[in-house]
Amino acid sequence: MDFKERVKRAQELLVTAKHVAIATVNADGSPHNTPVFMAFDDGLRA
Image (cartoon, rainbow, N blue to C red; front, top):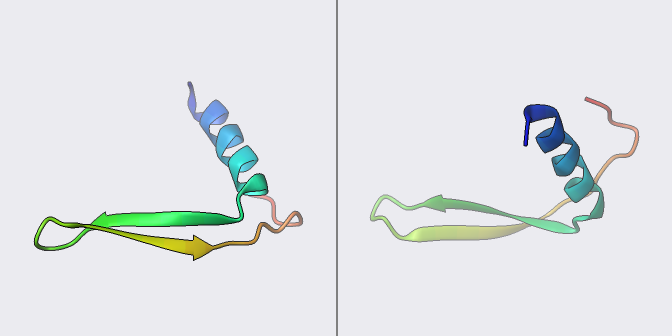
């Protein structure tokens, strides 16, 4: 999948997603995952 295809897929997911998760790793190596509400702005174009 090339870059343009990845961007298109990401846009498709963002239009339909109601929440996303931000995940990282704590200093001790344990995972940290936080759900985040999101809203997509149809008027915003990148």
